Length: 234
Length: 404
Image 1 (cartoon, rainbow over the protein chains, first blue to last red):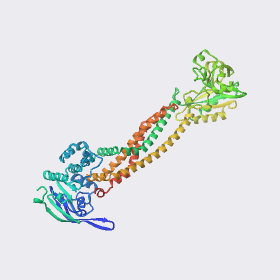
Image 2: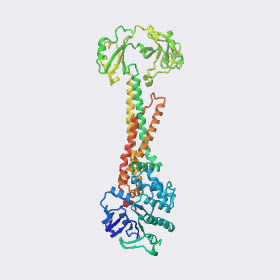
Image 3: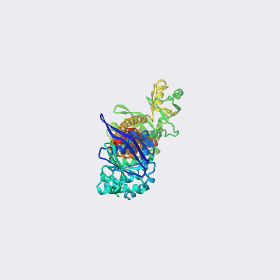
């Protein structure tokens, strides 16, 4: 198993109140899976993926990544794990505004110890893969939302992570662009076996995955494969 | 991330925010420029003084003691006898004592002017006298031929003859000999001009050909000049004071005349003291300027950190460690101040060159590697010291808070 969550609980201290955001989560994700996590706002989706993505380690229970727990690992170790193993795609793209596309996409490679010179051809390759060749010298504001999200995807996959976490990747996009972006994720998973964890509140988008997890008030309410006519790509 | 890549990132983010960066650098630029300018001028000055006072053959600092008898007629006795010389030789800081005649160049004489006596400075020249405002200059030819002519200054001309041109072709008595006034130079101030003094050209009230004067006064005023060679590190002014003190108390001719010192470094000392004071003052102001500039840098870095919270979050999510973020912001502030320091150094060099190009400045500014190293070191230090806290704040941002 790539990712294993066992009886995970998480609490938020909101003033005097102790608010439980995750309730007894048990979840196993294997290599090569395309997993959709769906639920309404405030259901705990983001808390869950922050935990899976090594951004948050304030939780109770056990999270094993490749059989190892990193709950007590140092900040440096977590940074290295994020750098080597996780690719993030955010709802609002989260590109650095005054940096060029090249500078944005090369970040994971540079933080992995590569030189700019060595990173450049790899970045160009990743941009070509998401359908944006020859745009490495542009800045994000010169691109449309869909194109910016493609850049973000290129950034998430440029360093060949173990899995990609996509948090509402189509949340800021129209239906047509959403379909295009989802197609890229689909292809990545199908053709290259990239493990993808997709978070959405859009039922339509969730159907691109092979497995659908529904979450409500911090607890998993359903965990079933997406099959047959339900599947967005049949 | 590699250091070089972090530094490139830092440099680029400075260049992307040019206006703010330049405004922040301004304090550093002004502070460094001020220090560099004053150091260059100070160095130039001390080089020049050292060169001026050691420009004699031996390359050693020399100072002189002159004996002036009260009554010129009574000069039968030796101005300095063996005992005097022995006394002087024992003074600390003196390497060698040489006795000669002051006849050579200058003399202080008294002249009757309107029923009073006035002290005047006479120059016995071999060559040309300085510029005149009426009549003509003395030339080398006057000296060769033995023309009994003189150039006097406007002040003396006025008090003797009531005007500059009136004085021409009148006679003036120097050492009981009459000289024809052929030229009048500009008035000589009572205080000696510093530049002239250092270049060995003291403006005098009366200038006459040397040969003519020597002819008439051959037997007079011999051995009234002591040239003291100083040991290394001895201060001319202090040695002179000691020698004068001893001679005035025990000198063989103390009752018949007066001992005076001629210290070539005295005015340099005064000027140097003033320059030192200015250096300290400018350094203090520059220090304050740099401190305030440092606070400006710190302020800007805090604003920058706050503005770029998302960027920090993105970088952290992409695998940046806390020390990567800290180093990025630290390098950013250091690069900013180093750039400021370099610009300030350039500006300081230009300023110093500009100041030394002014006609009143008798010397050129001098630039040393030390000045450059100081500018570079100070600006780096300011950037690092005032960048540490914002950089730490940036690195300590909570990833969960900023990645929403």
